Structure formats: structure tokens, C-alpha cells
Length: 265
Image (cartoon, rainbow, N blue to C red; front, side, top):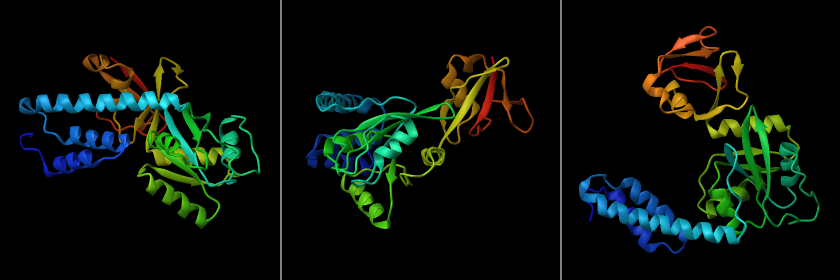
């Protein structure tokens, strides 16, 4: 028994004992590891929990490969959910140029379809989930960063929300129509992800591919993302637009979406 473990830890432990699926066991173990106090007296238990978690994740990965699991690529992965004939494939094509077959016949898409959209240099991997909502496909949704619902009516919204709830999926969600302007949809996706793009500058050259950080990130976070060793020799950074072009700032300066940063170290 772990020393001074909070009550939440034992609730997670009970969830693990009662879990009937691999995913439920993985979630419970992840929660147990997060809640377990980290000190010398808990080292053996922590190691045992991590071993169990690693074994279950390996099993999941092997099973996923057998089922054609899609590898998460790009900066973020967003799954597209919609009811039959809602326009998911049409929207995926509009956003990414994936060239997925579009048909009026329900359930034409039987396997997940993938495309990549560009948003200011950020690569957004979009995965269309077949409307049959099979368990292995919904596992992809659980592994994503956000969900894009193709909604044409209140009934659509209610049914899709019920699907997410039924699979225990709690992720950032945004909505769109199949005929909505692609750039508007991308902006909506980006907003719900709560991320920012920071572009690095060296001399006169600004990189087209940004660093992707969480909202509220600072210069310290950006520098660590560029190269952690730069933190040891960091002197200052210049920011555009800032209060004025090239404003001189320190590590605690809070960055905004679209900022350009030049680091001096």
C-alpha cells in the first residue's frame, strides 16, 4: 500500500480491478501513476504500475496494427465524426484534397480516411471516422487531440454527442457543416485546440513551420522546444509584433498566437 496516497488513488485502483476492457485498465493505471506520491517508499509500486501499463500499451499497439491503426502524424490529429450522408468525406476533401470517394450511398466509407490540412504552417491530420462507429475506430478518436462534428441539425448534434458519451470520450469538440468554407473550419479547429503558433527568426529569415505550443506558453517554453541547451546560455529574445517591432523580452514573456521570436543565447 502506498504511503500517504490520496483517496482518489484508491478509487483509481478499484477502477483497475473492475475494468473489463484493455482501454479501461490503461486509463485506470495512468490515473494511479499520476496520483501515486513519488518518494522512495513508493518506488517499487510505481515501477510495477509502469510495467503493467507498458505491457497493456504494447498489447494495444499490436492489436491496433492488426486492425489497420492509423499512426498519429503532423502537429495535431483531429477526427471527423458525422452520421451517414452528413458530408464527412466532402468536408475532408475540401480541407485536405484527400480525394476520398463521395457517395450518396450510406456507409460508403468503411475504413478511416486520412488527409492533412495546413493552417499557417501547422500540419493538422484529419481522420474521417466511418459512421458505423466501430470500437476500434473510436479508439482512434480517443487517441486524437480534438473532434470535428459534421452537424446539419440539432438531432445530428444530439446523436453524435451520445456516441462520444457512450465511448467515454472527453475531448475538445467543434462543429461544422460539410459546405462550410475550409478556412473557417480550420480556424474553428485551431481555436478549440487552445494552441498557439510561434515562428522562429534567425537574421532576416522567418521559418514557415511554426513551433506549436499550448496557450499561455512563455519564451522559456519556446526556447526549450527549439533546444533545451539554449536555456543555459539564454540572454534575451526579440518578439514581433510585441509592444513595438523587435521588443526585447525575457524567459517569462507570455507568447501569443502568430508571434515571431528571435533568440539570443
